[in-house]
Image (cartoon, rainbow, N blue to C red; front, top):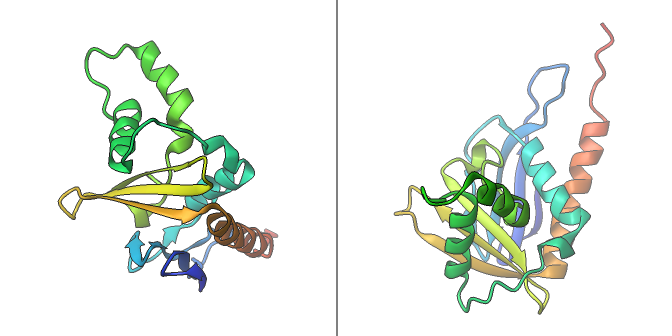
Length: 178
């Protein structure tokens, strides 16, 4: 199934339940960002849970990721966040790492967000003009960083469709009676 429009922003997934009583929500999944696929739609049996959690967090308070980084290019925002969250050098104190994590972790998008996003790093923020900026790095593509923008209403609508689908599918899971 596809939530949204692949030409702008879409979440594509195929629920392929595993035979288990815990009813782990698994299958294949990727996002489409301005026709660019993000995630491996061919990777089977991927957990949807972490992706669901991350996207739910964004939907619970989309305004929390509003920020003016003061950079003209999203590539610079990506590099700034990458240093603050993942690339601290030896001169950065442990206390500063904790402060930076508390301040900037909310901009992490789907880094370690499920097996389908292995080999990627991503960040997202909302600008003052109501556009969500999503910046992704795919390591097997020469570490190229791709930056796209999506209208806030489109991002919220499509993401909420996925979140609500997940909640509905999970609530209908079989219950272990043994």
